[in-house]
Image 1 (cartoon, rainbow, N blue to C red):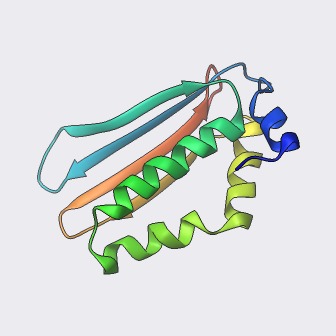
Image 2 (image 1 turned 90 degrees about the vertical axis):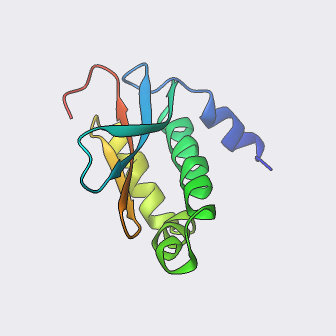
Length: 115
């Protein structure tokens, strides 16, 4: 549930106007990636929200040992604040998760910013 202050923050347009969010899987020994989702939004908080949702979906499908880093990230509030600071200042934020033969890359970045 969102508090009224947080709900207001979510709808404030960030200084870059737009933020792109992408998730992809990279299989070992494969040249191409598999797109797992993408989303464009208007604020760093909404970009972080999307990263959290996609991370949750990915970790739900991994075995317990490989899901642990993603589950830890989902509860790491200081890291979320760092991600927000990166996005708000024009820097991309990336999270990478692994299992035996796949690398999952989730990234958010300000539109038009050199990251």
